[in-house]
Image (cartoon, rainbow, N blue to C red; front, side):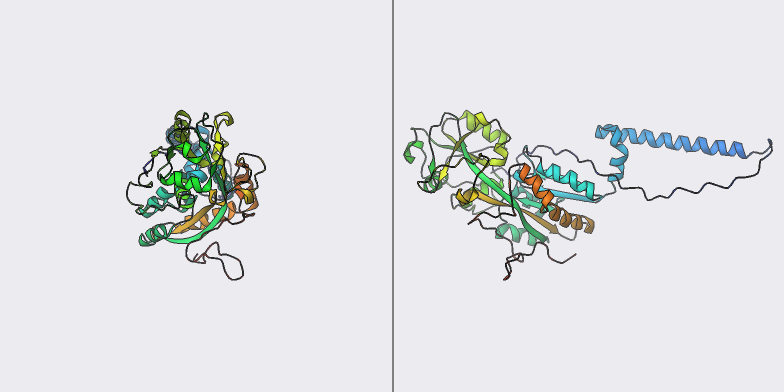
Length: 392
């Protein structure tokens, strides 16, 4: 997997200008009339001219800043925002980008609540961990699969601790092929063999035509990691190398969901997996969904309006996670803002935004879907689970 896959640039968010705390100066007392020979009016005129020159210079500078941002009307607010603490949210493309504006909506709403600059970078879950370990600006790590023990240890070795960890919702994964593929469904046990390279032709699964299976996948993607681990029971033995897929398997790398879908539609016998939330951003007539069955039950269309997650294969339902990070190099104000952001996302309003993008609220956990937390955030004997540790 190419962990350096390009990502679409994120639009800067407009911060909210804090109310001014400067009091209006009291009006000076009326002075007695002065003679025409006094020099005070001349001095007052010179002061006013100097002040206007200063204002003119300042406005000229602001216009230059405005040209860089492309929005002159917002210049003053943008300059003020330079003094706000930054909140960097980095990781899963499923949560943070790739055509889904959920994180943008969250950020805009949060900036109306707090004086903070929200920066969103959808780079993939695996690459998000790498950027945090490398010292990049990462206050909140977004992941579409549970943090592994190796990833947790890499963060600790870099001097990074987890202040908060929580699930924020659920996502459903579906498999798509080219629109000419007439395979009606894939059994879970056959899906594992396909992903591991033991089944390489559609004719081998009983209801497929003779055609080689060509699998497309995104290296460094949390979705890729999750499917390989849960549907194929394959764990990458070395997350630091450039070998991501099972050996002797027929995988082809693509850099984004858009590129992967384009190649899937253009390639006979293709197979690709992707979040159904993202699939809903695409033209439905181009989506050839192949249902995954556990047995002889009726196939479920994961793009339907009333999907019962308790009837969907639980290996293809994943919790979505946010982790608040802390280290010696991070601003305390940003850390507190990160905690507040997580609380906002898990609020009713934050969950309404999540559901509007066709994810599923964490308020209603599907049966047999485990929420796996790192050390310190396990479920307590009373059934509750800590979201944040009391370090601040």
